[in-house]
Structure formats: C-alpha cells, structure tokens
Amino acid sequence: MKQVKKTFFASAIMLTYLGFATNPALAEENKVQTTSAETTQQTTRAGKVETKEPSNKETVPSTEASSSIPTTSTTNPSKTSAKKEESQVSKDKKDGWIFEENIWRFYEANKATVNWKKIHGKWYYFDKDGIMLSDTIYDGYILTSSGAMVGSGWAKIKDNWYYANPSGKIVKQDWKKIGGVWYYFDKDGIMLSNTIFDDYLFTNSGAMAERAWVKLDGQWYYAQASGRLIKNKWDKIGGIWYYFNKDATMASNQWQGSYYLKASGAMAEKEWIFDKNYDSWFYLKSGGAYAVREWIGSYYLKAGGYMAKSEWIFDNYYNAWYYLEDSGVYVTGTHKIDGKAHQFQSNGKWIGEVPVSRGFEKGKYTYTVFLDPGHGGKDPGAVYYNTNEKDLTMQVYQKLRKELQGLGYTVLSSRDSDVYVDFVTERSKIANNTNSDIFISIHFNASGSPASNRSGIQTYSYEEAAGYPSRINSYWHNHPDRISESNRLAADIHSSLLAETGAKDAGLLQSSFAVLRETDKPAVLLELGYIDNFNENQQIRSDAYQNRLVAGIVKGIQKYYAGK
Image 1 (tube, rainbow, N blue to C red):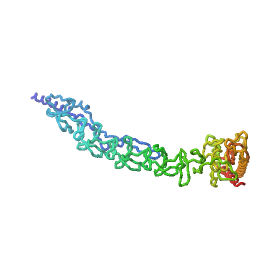
Image 2 (image 1 turned 135 degrees about the vertical axis):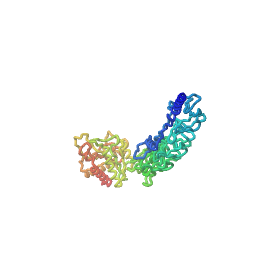
Image 3 (image 1 turned 30 degrees about the horizontal axis):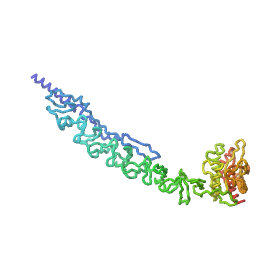
Image 4 (image 1 turned 90 degrees about the vertical axis):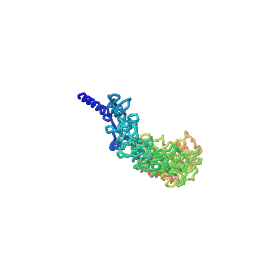
C-alpha cells in the first residue's frame, strides 16, 4: 500500500511538470498586443508629417504619406524556448509540449497532435508532421511567433500588417473601419500603405487620407472628404486654385490652357512668370489668364501671351508703332535700329525715321523742340548738399516736356532717364539727326566755393573759340544765321526766366561749349542757379520754384517762335 502511494505521488509530480511547466500556453502563448480603436486613432494623428510653409499666402500641400502604424507586437519563439522545456518523460511516453529537432510539437498519449488544437484557451495549428506553425497566415488565420492564433485585432507578420475579425479570420480584399479610420486589405489580407488604390490614397500608417494633402513618391495629391483623390480637374483649396492631372498628381511648373501652375502648384495671378521652355515672360492677370495683345506698364504682350522684345509692334488701339528693346521696355527719344536712327515720343510712340542732318533754315519751323538734360549716369554734374546736378536737370526737363507737349509742341530729347550720353559730340549728333527747330541744354551752376555766395541765372549762346574747332558741324557752327538766331533765342529765354523767377541776372553770355558748337541749329545753354549756394540750392530743389523756371523757359520759347 505504501508503494502504491509513492508511485501515485511521483506520477502526480510528473504530470504537473508535463502539463504546466512545459506548456507554452502558460509561458508566452499569444504575446500579441492588439491595438484598440482609441490607440489606432491616436497613432494615426501622431504620424510623420512633411509640411511646407505657405508663401505669399498660398495654400501649400503639407502632409506626407506617413502616419503612425499599428503597434501590435509578436513573441519570438526563441524567447519562449526556455519555458518550453523538453519532457523528462521517457521516449516511449510523450505528453504535452515537446521541443525537439528545433521545433515544437504537442503530444497526447504519446502521439503528436495534427490540425487545429485548443490548448489552455488558445488555438494552435500543427501540420501533418505535428509541427506547430508560427509567424504565418494559415487558412486565413494569424498565427503569431508563439504559435497562438490571434483572436481579433492587429498583427504584424514579416513586415506586413493584418487585421483579424472577432472570429479570428483576417480581413481580405475588403475595406475595414477601425478606430474611426478606413483601411483596405488586399486579397492576401495585407494592409495597403504608401500607395493608391481605386483612387484612394493610403498613408504610411495604412489610414485612408481624408481632407488632406499627401506627398507620395515625390508627388502631391489631395484627398477629398470622401477620401477620393481629385483628378483631371481644377479645385479651389484654401482659397487657392490648383489643377490635378489625370493621374491625380498636382500640376506644377506647367500651363493648363491659359493658366500657369507655379512650383507650389498654386495658380499664378497678377504676376510675371518666365517660362524657360518658351524663353519668354508672360503676365498672368487677376483671374489667372495670361495677358494677350495688351500693355502691362512699358511691356507689350503679344498673341499667345509672349512678351515682345527686340521688335516692332503696331498697336491698333493707339494707332501707333512702338519698338521694344531686348529687355521688353519700349524705347523713347532717339534710338538706332538696324543701322537707322528713329525718333520716339516719351510714351514710346514712333515719330519717324530721323532724317540726315539738314542744318538750319531760318524762318521755317516744325515746332519741334530738342531738350538736353545735362549730365546723367556716371556723370552726376555738380554735387553739393546731397544734391546731384543730373537729378535737378531731369526734374526740370520732365516738367518742361510735359508743359510744351500740352501746348502742342513736339519734344525730343538726348535722354529720358538716368543714363550717360557723351557731351562732346553725341548730344549734338542726336539733335542734328532730327527736324527740331531749336536746341536747349539744361544745367545748374557752381562756383566751386560755397563761401562765394554767387547766385542767379546765366544763359549762353555760341561764340567761336580758336582752340575748339568743330568736329561734326563744320559748316553751321559759325554760320551767321545760326549765330544770330541762337542769340535771339538766348535773349528771349533769359529775359522770361528773370521775369518769372525774380532771380538775379548773372549774365546773358556767349561761350564755345561743345553742345553749342556742334549743334547745327539755334542752341542755348541754361545755368538755372547755383547749386553750391545753400539758399539757392534749397530754392531750386523746391517744386514751386522749378515750376517758375519752367514757366520762364516756355514763355521765352513762345516769344522766339513769335519772332518778337
């Protein structure tokens, strides 16, 4: 009887060891952590996001195809092996879990289990050789690294994510809303990610994009509230128009009809765009369409929206010809084109081809006045008290030109902007190639010593100087008709200037200045005040005093043409 009790007790200890200590269900069965709906939503929102800061208040795509992923983990069989110890039962008596030949089997009455087996509440599958399957999908069920079947939830097998329904069967070739987020699983049950399927985009987390910009493989897409991608159409997003191609990619750096999509994808509006493919500038108006056959400032946009450059343009609206230089800006004044000189108004309208110098014919007038704003460009003229002479001459010229044009005179000039024009022969050469009646060069004086306090207006006409022979005006420079008419013009303007301004009479003088010597028509040079005299400097800089100077010059010109 005692021997029976000892045998029973020993058997009980052995069964306990075999049934519990070596059973993986008690060790690390089904160490899969299923992700709750709440966790899925949180990880989705916390995903990696690629953003770009908007420029010029444009809406810029900002969310890359990257969201958090399901966090289910599985148990490595190697970690459970220590708890799945080999049975100490003799070879002719196997029962429970046995680790042999580097594989797991489950024995019952010395026979290896095959097919499905529920062990301690967990399902396992054993093949025809009794080998436990693990880290795989079998018959639509997920078997983790411990071999235990996933009852429901997320599981990752070999870098692929799967989702098991409460029945244990994985979702296949179907949509599934999990934690408020839509996912799609292919025919093998693998969750789609970083891809587009049936016009829906799936992010790095597998979540279907909704109301969001997503960048995938270097291309931007936009998913609507339904999740569908926008394709082959315009759409206004965040107040900005975008266009999406047939493949749903956002259009950029390209034309869509008369509209241009910039690098950001935003439609261009009220701005210039240079398209290197056409080697041309275009102007996109309000609404986005490019300008056609119209002026934008000093630039002209032709048919097709191309900016005109280095070419003639006839504008039907203004019934006038224009010439656009290489920069696209229309030219003014005298401009040489294809070897011929042409004259243009200050608004760019072509006057005509400049005739070969015809000299001067007394008493015959075209009522064309040639104005020469002194200095310019690299030549500032006199500089005192932060004032450049070239700036003052340009200010007076612009006012004078406007006034004369308003009275019906045609006004030509040596320069219309801050450019350098050689004073020795170039200014006279330009004037000589026009049909202008008179030449007026505008300057301001300087004594060279502010302490002298010199002031007043000087007016010069031509006087021959033996040391300065003419270079381009050999016939007319000393012609008596030109000299007498120059003197008359100088006297008329000088007296009118003094009467209008009340300035000190600094002299009606004669000199052999280059512009007076080389010009083949009546010519005068005006010194309208001393720039190095502080008080006079302040006066001649004022708008009111400049207007009085202009009034005096205009009255002098009118007196000259009247012949009185």
